[in-house]
Image (cartoon, rainbow, N blue to C red):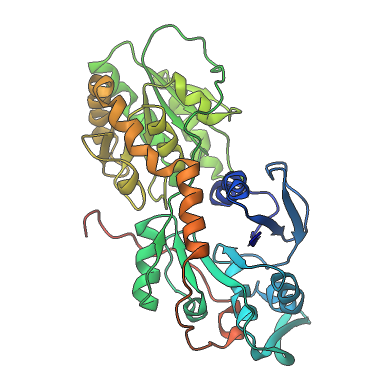
Length: 396
């Protein structure tokens, strides 16, 4: 039975971190024995049965936060040695990649007086036999040189893959993110009354653009007077209080319904006629893919991975970000044409069904290993800033 080790950056998974948890049952069915890690080893509620959970510190994001990863190289090598594939799930876990290559010197780190000091300690030489996989979940700027040592590179979208492929001269496999094609039904917080529902689901954050839908609501009602516009979600931990207050105040003034985060969000989409995803950046767009799987058209910003999820004029509309007027026109079009797009939406989303996603991972895990790249200095990338690059325009 082949064995897989997945290293997560956080104990409480969310967004991209949930992808491997969702795919784990399908990988188990394909014969994989799976161990996953978080910084403290606390098993999250989302972890499926059959997955072993262990602790593996990786440090936090940002410069100067890599000491925990460097100090844990030895323990990580010991853990990884018992697995056939090591999947480093994100840029922060990828700090551990040099430990798998075993160049003879293992970088160690210690904090002295609040400052990071690096020194080299003799460690086990030679690469481990495990296949190494680095998975990129965002559109990044500086690509650490050590990533070239990975046996395989994955990315959630072509937008995420492009800067990595360009920097390293390597092929990057685009995985998307897994979705459940038949989520459990849930009751909406509102009382259904036959009116068409246009909805936003997500954090009430500037980068997600819920204010754009609130601002577009009156324009939509001019053409579709009976429309019901709802904004569903809570403030994220890093919320801009002024922005969230503005969303709530304008929603109240324009008759847009505000609801907090609802359990079973994907199932809630069964009660939506058009989903709006007006993000200013979006590496993939999971909620958009979930809506399409249920036959719900999507009006989304033409940015990053969203242009790969939504087919303009076929499964919804792509509009410029922060343009409420264009958003209103897109929603009106989708409301009028939605019944004609149901089959196209469902078919388009099949590529992200969890079984298809798990098969892509399985194929990567079992593919022939390419020749190893020259080893990079592990200390040089431990604190490398992983920052978002400016997105290329669609079609560039």
